[in-house]
Every structure is written in C-alpha cells, then in structure tokens.
Length: 194
Length: 194
Picture 1 (cartoon, rainbow over the protein chains, first blue to last red):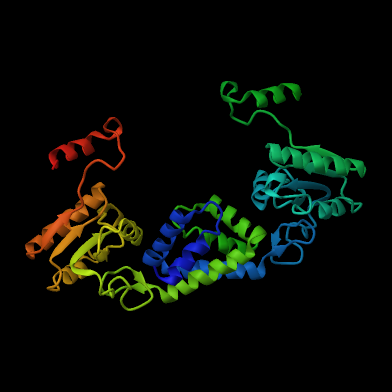
Picture 2: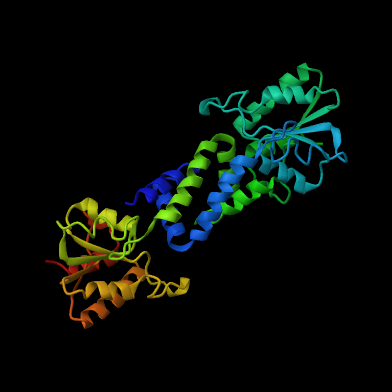
C-alpha cells in the first residue's frame, strides 16, 4: 500500500473509537470521494491545535485568554457550575435556566484510566471557587459512578473551605413513565421527594 | 464555542459515519489529550491528498505512476482479478492463492447512490482487459446485490469482447456447519457441487 495512505490510516486511528478497519474506510472515502474534505480537515486540525487553548478562569476551550462566558458581566459571578465537558456546558446553556459561571473539568476522576485530580484541574477549581466572589458551587458532573465520585471529592474539599455546595437534583426525567424508569432512579425520586 | 473548534468539528464530520456528537467527542479528545496526534493526522491528510493518486493500470491507490503490483514481472499478466477496494485486494493477496494482476473498481455499481459505470472506471477496465495479454478476467466483487450486479455488467461486456470471464465460487465457508449456514448459500453449494 502507498506510504502516505498507510500514514493516513495510522493518523485516523488516533481518533477515539476508530480501529484499523474504520480508519481504512475513512481514508479510502476521503481519497476517493472527498479530497477537498481531507484538505479542509487537515487545515482545521492544525488551526485548532495552534489556536485553541484553555480559558484561564473556567478551563474550557477558547481562543482568547479568558472565554466569552467568563468575561460576560451580565452573569451571576456568585454561582459556579462544575461540569465535565464543553458539550455538557452547552446542554446547561440551552436550558436558559442558569445564569452563573462555569468551571469545566475536561474529564472526570477515573483512576483506572489514570485520570487523577491534577488531570481534571482540581487545584485550579479550588483556587477559582475560593476567589471570595463565588458563594455557591453547583456540581453538575454525570450521574455515573465516576461522575458521582468526582462530585463527592470536589464537594468534600469545597465544603471544608466553607463554601455552599449543591448537586443537580436526581429524579424522574421529564416525560418519563414510571414503568420504564430504572429502580435506582425511582428510589432516589422517592427519597428526595418534595 | 471557539471558532477553530467549530471548524474542527465540521471538518471531522466529513469523515464517513461521523455525526456531530462523535465529531465533538473526537475534537475534545484530540485537543485535550492528543494534540500530537492531531498534528500528525493533519500532516498525514495533506500528504495523502498531495501524494496518493490512482495507478494508471489497475486504478488502485499508489504514489507512483504504476503501482508495485502492476510492475511486478513475477506476476501472471494473463489473469486479471476485478475487486472492489484495496482492502479486498489485500484479502486476496493474503491467501497467497493468486499470482495474477488486479483491477480495483474503487466501489461498485450503485444507481441509488449515484455510482454509475464511469465512477468505478469501467471504461478503463475494458481497455485494460482487452490489452491482448489478459486471457481470463476473474470477477471478485462482493456477493451482495450491488456486487453481483456489478459482476454481471462487467461479465457481459467482457464476454462480448471475447474474453474468458470467471466468478469466485459460491459455497460453504471453510469451518462452517450446515445447520448455521443460510439456505441461499446451501442451495448454491448444491447446484455448483463438484
């Protein structure tokens, strides 16, 4: 096989969830049907690596020193929502139910995958949350084992620093029918009934 | 979201089978954990677009005018195996049961997807097969509806040009148990018994 083609297949395998068969299929597709797309992706990758960095305040991806959310003076700086990824942040933003600021962990604690407190920037988060302006930290990590563990570690540390720490409510999703909801969720919804 | 990040997500969506959620996940992964991989993939894409072209004889991907298989004088130039993709070619090569040459369609006839005879280079194949050296053309397209239709069209055209045309044998896979083989395959194996 051509060397450049081999190198392309190897390059595509660096993408998460892409094995050698998918990578070959992608390479053939780009070279056979979408060379323009390949050049576009090549430039986009390089531009992103050069331009995208982390916001010094909330740790999300941005091209500026501080991201547009953190510099928005309309926002309530007394509340800080801790989330795992930029995708989670846009989900919360789309609800239009939150006007505070964010801290993006860019991951969650996952000792088995070698992701420790430093990898998700917990030292930065603790410094950020204790700036004297933040009054409440809302933990919005996933409700998975790793997300819960991450929330627990952050919650303990911030409560010890005298901050008010809350967690997103657990309960039944909007539009759900009891019959089809898992028992753990129903049990939580019962215990946390209001 | 950062502009370069948006552009990267759009770029990754050009890959087959990648939607906006997978593209975001890939972009976050590369920027967060594998910037070196992103640069590597960027260069590999550009290099491949610049260097990889089609072999003028067999139509496969190559960096030279004619690919290394076509220039191999050890091979039997009187037989030409028609296959759909370079991946299929390497499967046939790995069997070590074939020493002839190849023609790679880079696809198969698929009118519903707008893939016609010209897109899979049938005019090139007909010119190649009637070079006076080729005696037998072996049709090794897939045993799917589209692969069979492609084989049928090529077979008819080449037989009309006086060439011997054969098709890979249909039958039971090695290691298979009758009980678990589909009925169409068993029927073909009965009819084509030897």
